[in-house]
Length: 132
Image 1 (tube, helix red, strand yellow):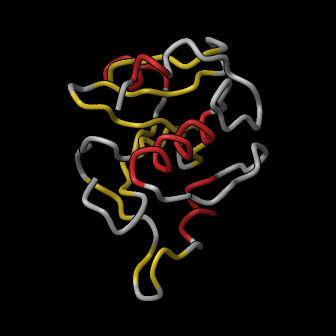
Image 2 (cartoon, rainbow, N blue to C red; image 1 turned 60 degrees about the horizontal axis):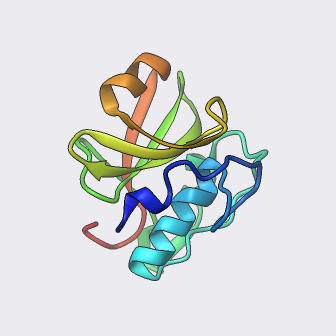
């Protein structure tokens, strides 16, 4: 997908695009546009969206999310402090993550190295039964 159409879009709490995004709204929009899969709509006040999203099912027999040891293109990048994950983005390849930054007030692309300096926890998830 064309990352440039997202970069610079304003951050807004609860926004799911296409004119503005919060972090989860950007992830949802990306996966719906690219794969036609609508991820759960989580409240911006959700403290740990990873735990909540794990309760949803994509197929009867399999959990919606699978954790990865290494990122793959289009996987969800979950970021947080300690065990609490409170931010998300999309891995776009080449060690880069697209995310809607509340601090920057817009959608940005940052390297995993930059994000590791900001967040103590970074995890990668395949958000549905798809190889991404």
